Image (cartoon, rainbow, N blue to C red):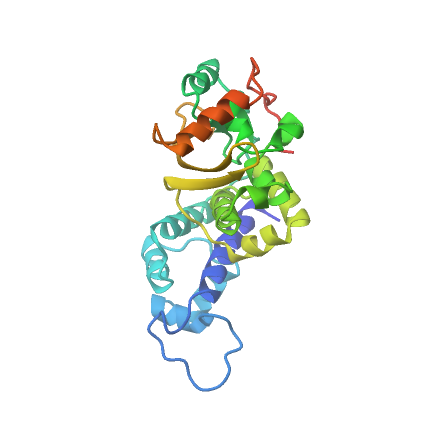
Length: 298
């Protein structure tokens, strides 16, 4: 498949997924009598709501039209009632569809700079790690790895938070809100893969999860995308019991999409005490950089 066709197809997939999940009632339409064979909006209904012809919209959804104007993109977003993150994703897909990309970029380097590993030590006892754009664990302090029980048993280059959520047997017991955790994980990967679908670090991970996890495959087909938000996460941890921590993710300047994740708890609370215990009982090593330079996920 040619790159420009692939780009148009990705735009079409997103439009189709959002269309089938938008009810006529929520779009201000009154469904006619009889059983609707199409879930959500019909193509002609979305075209009318967006002010474009049914032929033009059909070409968009089928990947045959790859240069929608900003006005058309915004009109589609309004008709589909996209939130800010989804609207921006649609814009990104449209820009990519209009661009010819002859070659996919290589997987980004997994090398973590020494000052970042020093930073991980500095924030102890707070669990912290550096992850790649596809959620590979590239570096961590003791608590940052111990927070995910069992992940340390995997080879260093297999340690990926998405892989852990879907494939590690401990994940369902660790997260009381596992369903919410996996939805957020897939949405993040979907948003990234949508604008760079041929990236080798993403395609290998996504391909593995589609093959091995029906839950992942079902969520992947929905094509939900969300923005990153500061969240509070609760863990039912086998070593320290129930612990609720606030999570903050931060983009690291000057890196190929790497992010720093840090968990915190208010001093003097049971959660902070549990966090201290986790740091004290976690295996203490001198090198928390498990990944090899330029190694792809998997």
